[in-house]
Length: 639
Image (cartoon, rainbow, N blue to C red; front, side):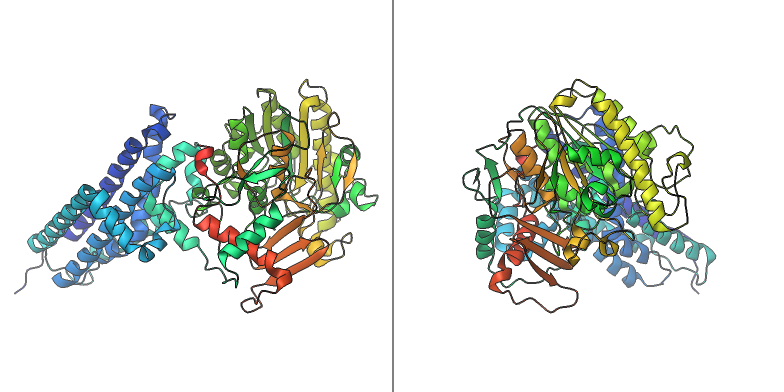
């Protein structure tokens, strides 16, 4: 007769596996720190401790996703020793895979200062090279991993043989354990109880360097591979596509390409504006729509009197476009100067581990102090973490901004207080500086006025009236900011760049009256450069977009640090201007010499590239290939 043993050995086995995995990840984090001590040398002891503690979140995520199913299965009350050993075998194999990834990550980081992302997809094409690397250059590392694997198999099978026992069927405790472990693994596979699933960008809430120590190669590889979409195959050879893009991108009289390994990285050799050591303030205007800005539309809504006054004294860009349709893409275009293309990794999903021209870091390298403030919550679009990754020394959101007025409560922030707080932070900066503010009050939904004292139009419950009143409020906040700024010593030597992140939803875009074409209705936005001491008022009718911001700042400030960008300086004398636009990567557009080329991946089959469309598809192919292969920009320049 079989005697039932109530031992919790399956739970004990699970605990041993989890502790083993945590120990492995801990050892490799220590190894990462030691092997790259120079890179992490700027971190204090407290920051290193912080990185190890918060790195735990990324470790348990990686463990849950890579091994969770087998940790769950060994607790299923199936009375079969063979079933247990099969699951232990799979667990051992996946632990070995994790170790190999972590080993490769440490080696990769030592050479490139970045964690693994989609590089693991290249292994099958270069097996001979990796075997050579493993058994020649890193033979002792490989031998240690093999020995560890043998020990792991031996002791896991020995533990099962020694402690295995039958379980009662329909036992309440067994069911509780199974559901409990399942729940815990699901929570860990999300990275916690927060609203969004844990992303790579979450590591950068403290700083970029601290974030690199928190991350591990298993997590970054899992996130990058799972987020990677297979791009449509463009019928242009890579080298041909690259030649087309380079020929259309470079003005040989002003810039030179400098590195064959990073074929779009270039350096400015001639400057069109003498703005050296000027400070720069960029204000990204949430959903500001040209239809309701009287200066742009010729209307008489009267909701943007302050912006209208500034525009009258500025360089105004009449053909300026947002490269995408979401705020995160606006941030990506302004700060990295690269648009989104089909199949490309998003911010937070691996793009950070591809070398990028991070505008704040580039300016800091040239002696610029900096600050980032957004009116919305710190966690919105992961903006604070992104700001730290980009190289901002200080970053603030709604939670940091004191509120003085009695508002209708909204989920977003309030631009009067936000811009006042921004002014306070600018006052603390050393000259020259780079300061960034992202407005928020004009974010959807617009239905109600948030401050009755600044209600331009009587509320009627419609989106349009709500938007007009929000726009009036935000313009008033902008006016207060500039009234104070004009009294400051730094004002005369500061360049203000103001542009929208995208068109307004519902009240603008395709519903607007100002623009005629579908592309203009979807992507065209207001943009001005204001600096009365440096620029005379003028209307610029050249094609331009958000990705032109970095080349423009580099040109104006006379910076010769190399950069990569698909854009051009707005002051360049080049005649061959183009704008690449992307609607979530599914619809792409190219504006070139007043012609529009487009393609809709969602509703069409694979493209047959016509001669006239070659630049459109060449841009997409080159951006995708260079970012996936980490050949967009040499990250060591800014590290």
